[in-house]
Figure 1 (tube, rainbow, N blue to C red):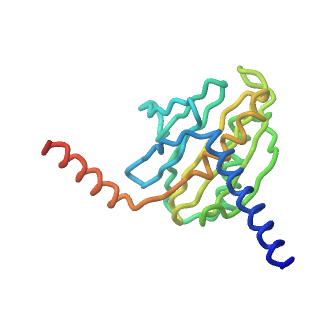
Figure 2 (cartoon, helix red, strand yellow; figure 1 turned 120 degrees about the vertical axis):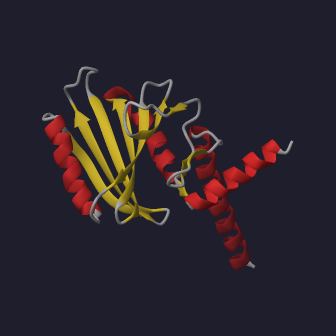
Length: 194
């Protein structure tokens, strides 16, 4: 009897923890999924954020928030297969060339949602906007293709922005692009028959 009671209490505690995590994520993110069809990338954007595709650069999406920080998404294709360690070396080199005062705060290679990812955080003490933090997370979706999430935030907003940034990355889902196109065409055909 005691063992059954202990198991029920543990199960209840576990389910409350999962519900708490889901509630926290839903409190940070919109429930409407944003989709990029060419590569099958989709995410949940932050609540009350704007998602735009600008033609001035290669970002597939630029997310702007009312809190003064932005999250940008890129698809990066390499000519040769690269490991995350090689990407890490190249990204740090590019950041320190572009911003000589950049300080690497931390870096981490992990596996999240079955994808290997590299997270880099840089503190930029001297920018036109004042002290700044740039975070770059490279999610490897194939040996030559990476989804790059980039957080741009004033240092003063970092503690607010970083949990949202991490939640957006955790919401990443990959779909077969051909299936998405077929589904989209079916929906368009259904719309024409109305």
